[in-house]
Amino acid sequence: MVGIRLFSYILVLSLFGCNQLKEEKKKISVIPEHRNGFLEIEFLKEAPFYEAERINNLYLFNKEYLLYEIRPFFRYRILLKVYDSSDFDKPIPMKEVTWERSKNYNVTVFYQKKDTTWQPVLVDVVGKDVKF
Image (cartoon, rainbow, N blue to C red; front, side):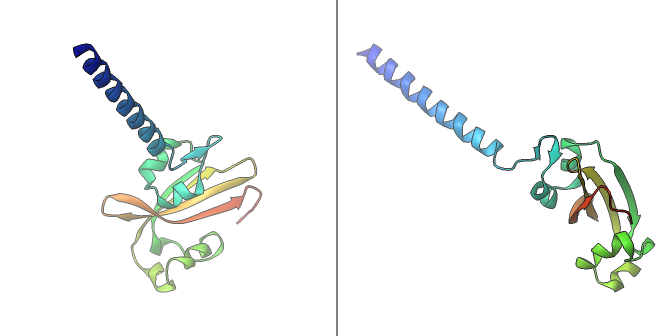
């Protein structure tokens, strides 16, 4: 009798443990952070810079500046999707980081510093042969 209870108890615990392990695996694979060594666009749209850098710190370009130090021409005209032209007169802390996206494309993420964290404001995928 004790043997059957012990066996039932072990069986229930092992089945519960397996289900819990399957749930943890599902949680891990919910957000694909990178594919074939390249960061995913959806991940970059949501992840602060420190998370993206943790996944791939081999960026091609990394520069910090204040928004008023640039003008919305050429490369930076895309920022007009997020900021008004009057914002370019303000000292908004910005970071621009470019990673290789694929053999033919790069991805640039513009971050704005909010409190102490660099949060993404815009993601742009550009062909490697494009000159600004």
